[in-house]
Amino acid sequence: MGIELIGWAAIALLALPLAYLTWSFVSVDRNQLVLIKENLSRTQLHPGEEAARVSEFSALARHLVSGTYAAKLDRLLAMAGRPSSWPLDRIIVSKPISALVLGGLGFLAFLMSPVLQLFILAIALLVLGFFLPDLLVYNAGIKRQEAIQLELPNVLDQLLISVEAGLGFESAMARVASNSPGPMAQEMSRALQEMQLGRSRAETYMALAERSSVADLKSFVRAVIQADRYGIGIVRVLKVQASQMRVKRRQRAEEKAMKLPVKVLFPLLLCIFPVLFIVILGPAVINILQSGLFG
Image 1 (cartoon, rainbow, N blue to C red):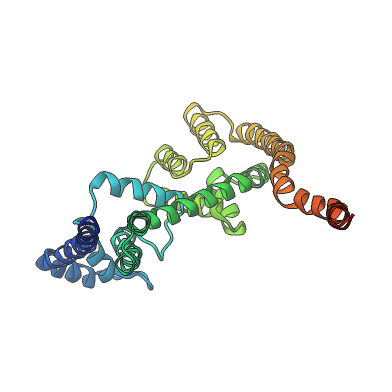
Image 2 (image 1 turned 120 degrees about the horizontal axis):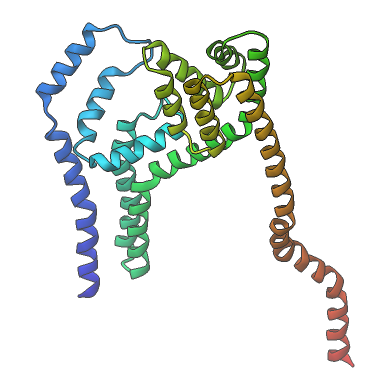
């Protein structure tokens, strides 16, 4: 009786998400989609943009998650640099699909062998599949923020050299962004584009800091905003900030070097020392056993 109840529960957990996903597709306002496509067809889009597909994803995605959760995902995407292949609506739609795929495999395994361990595994796969896109975006964001932190001292040095050569701060940003590949250059290019569209300097710099979790970048942005507000020479600010960034980079390198022996300790204990013990003590143990058996 208990196994039958677990089996019906597994079927329900597999069928209900499928039904909800089907209802989400059916309940999309088709008239609104038609109007969106007509409006998009009147405008000239950049080559490679998937306007019609994005509008369908957007209409469907708003039925699947709440606004707060979508805002959190958008924040993760901003930290990851907003990859063109993974817009927000596509990630939201992929969440139930990946949950159904992994959960369906787990529940099929459970139906073939109805034991409690497989049922728990199926539930875990269902949850993992739902949050798998979030984890991938979060991982990409962490790697990108680490790259920004590594690039920031070199970028500040290049900005300082360009400003001392006679360029304005925005012109120096454009020069560095065009000559330096990497996420920091992409963020500066986006900031320059926002200023060209009419956004104020302070708002643009604050948006640049909000798109990142790097404390050094936030400190640099605050210093630039204060310099622009109070009329402080940008060369002085860049010199101080570049010097501080170099010191912090050296301190982070020293910190990693000090942590290295602790990190190496566990591989030594688990992988290297047992092999050494076997090689050194193995022959002695074999001789003792042989002498005890035949002595």
